[in-house]
Image (cartoon, rainbow, N blue to C red; front, side, top):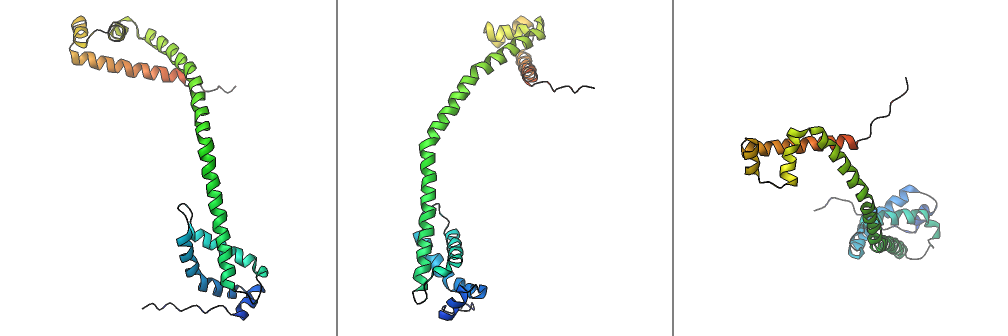
Length: 198
């Protein structure tokens, strides 16, 4: 059996003290209405909305607007009306955010893809220029492997026969060449650091 004390129902005196800024009176209000308010919100809150956050906003709004509460009226109805408006406000905000993303995200994605497409030819052309330079730096003995494989499309076993090496050695040589060219291209793509004057 729970030993948690049952919060007293806020009476007229408690509400009177609350209207005059008594924080202890507000604590009584929160203790009494927190569980039923959270339970009600849990049944009303759509996916994506934090019911605990709505409950917190409701109590804050009630405290800041307590002077608007009319003595003699039903406090619970007033509090739950605030909760209903807080929930509606948050639901509307999330709907607008979702609508914005649904409406504009495809356009933004299209623009970004177009921008990347427009930048791509320049990037590819730059990389090709660097590749040509890097291949020239290899010299004839090594560049002939690239010529055989990627221009003449000679099979690996035939390349092994032409070079007097095993197929495994030719594969390894091609791999090393690709790594070397990749490093060369990346180093040429990276801007040189600016030199500071002495």
